[in-house]
Image (tube, rainbow, N blue to C red; front, top):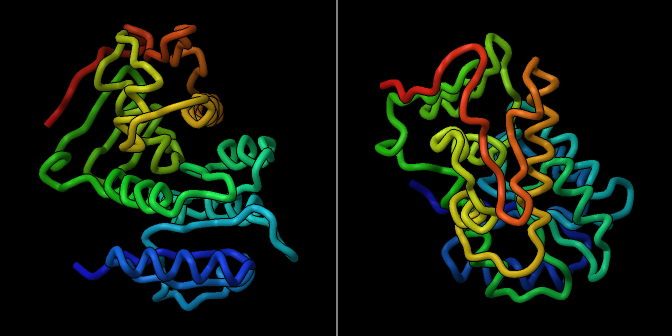
Length: 243
């Protein structure tokens, strides 16, 4: 396998150079774009393995680019790490609602950024031996773990990579409470300190997409102060793990 390609969409040359130097030193390839329009116009062969995306940019902001990428089947599961200005909580919340996988606020620690990039890449590409020929079923919900496709009855569930991983974590233990910390460790791959908005926003997106595909948001229950659980039973069937 070749080196993972990290795309950087950022209009501050100093930050771009900082990211390029440190990511390349860690063995990554990089491709940089000064604005979202340049990224959208990139050659087809420059499909990145992960996108580092700044929010505030001229012509088109990072939130709009994230929205467009999540609407396309080709980039629905592209890991997106969003960069936001210090104190701009609204940007972080909107980014997570739209489908960003993680965020960092400026100024940021390069060491932490590299750690999060590695965690997102690791979690976005499960080893084939882990998922080969497995399918999870919970009532009307089903997950093809090899093809990473989700369905609610006969309707496709258009989930991002992190939404898919969250639903898988809940479906593997229906009726059990899974803590926010446990979900962050399982899905994002690092220990969590501070607010839990990242997990909460992805759960909110997952509930919304369940409703849009004919399911119910109430299938995912909030256990206040602890985390989330998938309801223990489903009206249309039982939970099973099929090979």
